[in-house]
Length: 95
Image 1 (cartoon, one colour):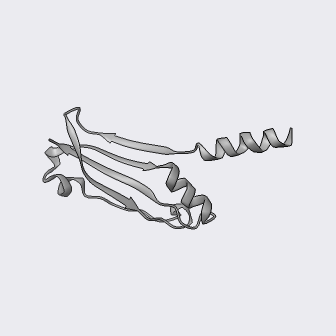
Image 2: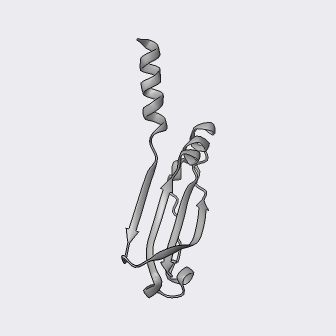
């Protein structure tokens, strides 16, 4: 019973990936820039900004912006006990 509880807890803990997307247009797009954002203490009182209009050459060319915490990001978070918590950000522009 104890082993089952540990297995279920570990599975739930490791499946906590998250993704936020801001979709501006349904046009065909391609990834223009991919950033790794570095946060400490789980991002407490920290923020990162990306100027998507500057990346795409104008606000009319921005299609979507995404921020995601992947499995590897979560692994880095666990390995450092929450001290270092990276996230990935992607900017999609019109083709």
